[in-house]
Image (cartoon, rainbow over all chains, first blue to last red; front, side, top):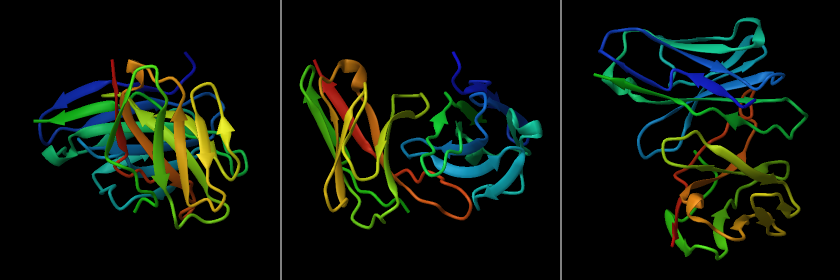
Length: 115
Length: 112
């Protein structure tokens, strides 16, 4: 399977703990996006990388959140001092920049539950 | 905010065509319409996209009106596995990226 993969698929943590999620994009895709989805809502944009550069961050991404994409390949999303409000599905998507016909392909997501 | 409006829910019989409407009256000339679906607890799955012309692929057909203010996603022979939330998205260039602004989508139930 050459799709987007995310690990772990599920994470349960206690409030105040740090968690880190990993996303492996489709190979050769130079753009990578993180979204967050809470129950009953559509996904919301968090941040975007072009190669290794983080070019945009949503106001939803508080200073407890940090994302990296070293070497422009996989990406990690870390949440420090988790809060119950961080409980959500965290989705990663990748795309190949091809003029204006860019299509984002999503991974299966990481479901986070903060107790 | 999402630039699209969709009915919150629809249903159709298995084997029949499912026609999912979407209004995007404020779409600009160079903005694409994308459709994704999300089956329970999975990541969104890309279905199809278009700009002006009708499009068809192995999953679905996309019909865009001439004035581009609305579109319809057609699943020609719906199966039970097509039960999902379907999102119609106008992809806009905001700041530096083509982020997808999801609305609430249409929950499609395919009945046996």
